[in-house]
Image (cartoon, rainbow, N blue to C red; front, side, top):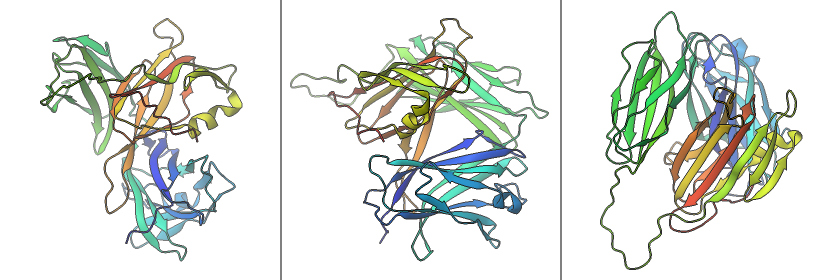
Length: 404
């Protein structure tokens, strides 16, 4: 019998992303209270490979120097790192006291001051549930973490036009630093109906752009990957088509049919993210249909504790634009929207996917009923306008379950 799970692992956030081999970094693990009332607290093992091999996160001395911390510091304590020399794995044991405050379901554990090991390669971090007696009971999550080199930087993938007319093309552009070894570039794409999965690639490194084929689909997702050796960095974007071809199965209509609820639920609507002074961030605008002002001292906690759950199938749309009307003056914004991904297995529950939101992002996600939504605090240098709307299929049902 599978023991009850005190927490659910929602996602991983390395900083920098990807981790830089030979440099210092950190890994944040987001967790949520489990399905039962965890009055007895929880014990977790954060397990990772150590040593001098390419797959190690850090060396043995580097593992000893890692500083773990949690957003709820009064509830979490950490044991000294333990080593399994036979298997080349190290573990930091995190202990959470009872009881989990139901009004703050999301908490985060961060491993800081990681001396990321050389050479560049994929490493991993797994989280295990541990019994009171100290025995591991089950693996809650495992995540692959690429280790890159400081020379390889792959950012800012975006289409010239995120919405095109039927039968038209658009150009994808990105920023990619030059390295002693030219990376291999590949493009994979697929649509919602008429565009099958395909892969191709620009012929020359100097071409930091690629023109799509003619599009005739509701939406097409493009994933561009830059690879050097065994290290691959990927970005994704999508392009929508005006009056793109769509198909359905047989339909029998006996009354009024409404595909999309109206009006859309305004989770955020033109939320102004500003910098009142150096080092401070502030937000002001419509949140959940009413106007709010989020002061600098509340900024991180608001986004970390924000949580929503869909109560019907529907579309989540996210739009971010620079507050300055001049192109090129948008600055840089980094925000991630977390949603569950995959199905539960014998090894643990479903994982999560964090969709990156950057300047001039136009993102549409079709989500099923019961999808949980989380956010990371946005980081930016200039003012931005952030909008996130929910449009239900067939009925107007707010996705809100409550803020953390």
